[in-house]
View (tube, rainbow, N blue to C red):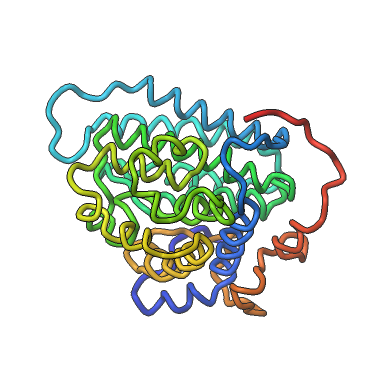
Length: 333
């Protein structure tokens, strides 16, 4: 199955939203969201060998950033050393994933490699945005679809792998002065990210001590930024933006007025579907192939009730309800 972009114009967005690929991806976002509800980042987790393996790969990527020093000359639109780092990704990740993901079908590895390479930004524009974040989430989702990651990996997928990814892309943004992709976060809550606000708000559901109106308080942010992904996002915004919070981050300021984290979480998922997954400038760059198939869903199910990631004829949410037969090692994050 040819691996290529399929959304060529605005009218193709409707076909994308009816596709198996869309349904798979929404199912993944929902399943991970459910898995980390009321689960903070510092909770002791069970890490499988597969989670440890992909965490090591992310740590290697972080080391490659150290290898590539930013250029000393002034760069108006991003530091061009990022292109050198990006070339390292392309050269090294394919062989690494081929060695780590032992599959008979090489196309799976090819597609997964393309998603993770695209996760870290654009080497020409030296920018980063929600489209790149989408690529990383598709990489993670793909690992579930081909049965590399299992039911017991769901919490660690968010709290370990995705959290580590966030640390890396933030380092890239600062080190290489990366521009926000698009019109300065026109399709996001801040200039760069969206998904950590979804999963981060899920972590705060049922939290009696952190009402939504407190996340704009800098003292509260400093106390809890390491414990909750949402607060970590707010901390990064406060580091990189100057001025009054409600002026530079108006959408987030408005969200702080919502009464409960549960309502915030539900609203953010709806917003993500509309403002990221429904935007042609983002989806036009997404390639589809064997893992994410751009064909109409046979049985379209509503997002609110169930998801339809099809692994061995099961939905991901159905799969998450069944315990694995092997018990992985227990390790502290």
